[in-house]
Image 1: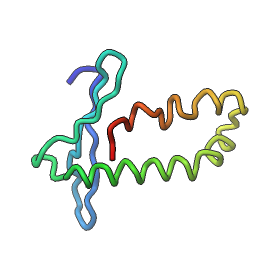
Image 2: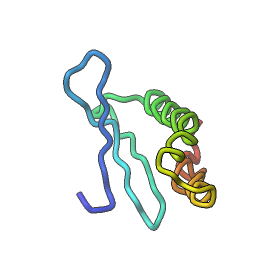
Image 3: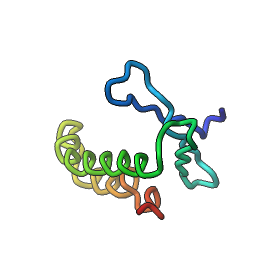
Image 4: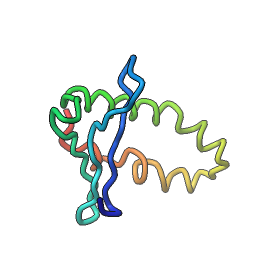
Length: 94
């Protein structure tokens, strides 16, 4: 595993151990999520639902987290839709 690669784990409901649901990799300054195959026990639809849930959570909690971190408006604007919810991260997702 290179320093530009990370595995994503989830804890399935009613399970005591996590499973790998995919891999995130940086290639030429672009981030790709490989949801894997059946070996990861996650369908494309399941992976998309996880990502959609993460997006909803980030959108819902963004202001509160920024306030807790005492980020000024300039820093919030620099991070929003650049570091968090960058449109390229969900390109091609239906």
